[in-house]
Image: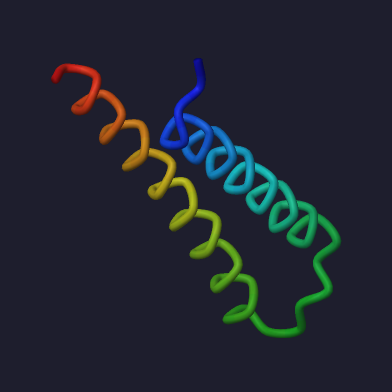
Length: 65
């Protein structure tokens, strides 16, 4: 049986991966005129990746209990 928490985790993980893919596609197109725009995009990808790492860590901690 899938709990609401598991379903939420699954959907959030999918959304994070989809957003990272969208941002990477935007980076590949490279429609940015300023380096700052490109760096901002890289920062968003890094932040989302860190968020996924935190979700994984939280899951490991809760699985221990």
